[in-house]
Length: 277
Ligand SMILES: [Zn+2]
Image (cartoon, rainbow, N blue to C red; front, side, top):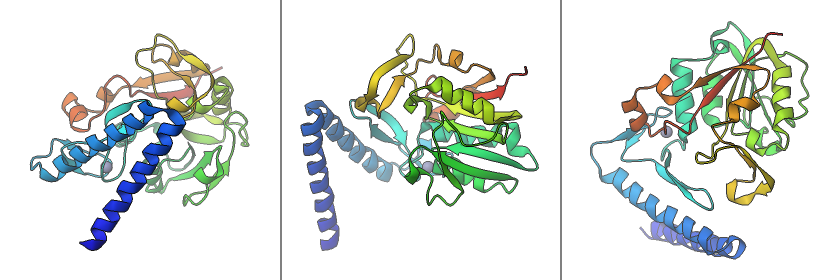
């Protein structure tokens, strides 16, 4: 009991220090967002322990409960995002159902090589279980590709160190919003993708924005994104690809979308194949 109290006191002290530093660095609003997020998640945690009939479940790990945790996004908080057990966010829950129920063709090939940008555990673990595929991780920052248990290559998506047409599949989720020249990055994806390969692309969307906006500098209020994509014009950027848009209801029922807490409008998978020339 004493150890538990000491642990709780240390966690509380760390949180107070974090809020203090955040208020100093970013202002009162950012401190308030963090305090609000923590308070809400304490309530969600209590409900997850108390409620006998689970109303949500995670397709990545099977966890069931009252609700997913809310996520502190700096200037704002997003509800019902993170699985308390495996930490899967909405896009990974959608991706898991997509890969299980409507997988890209390269998943079923006898053999193939897949490039995974900014390797995420929930996708990497799925790919590692497939004996027919060899997965290579890549990211701009070395710590994202080292020690991940799969071969890793530190690289800039705008200048990839791979020969033409060498990958059967590419996963590029929530990467392009960090890339200064996303057109160059997409051209590189096209170049290294086999003619019959498929690139799986997702980006975060600013749902209320009528068009994509380039930021003058990485925005610390938006996870250092260099632009905010609008769902109304993102597809136009996928030049040179035949694009299949996959929405949550293409891989699950409305009841499942509610149960897995996956928003219907903001989560879109772009399955891209090289246009025939
Ligand atoms: Zn989970």
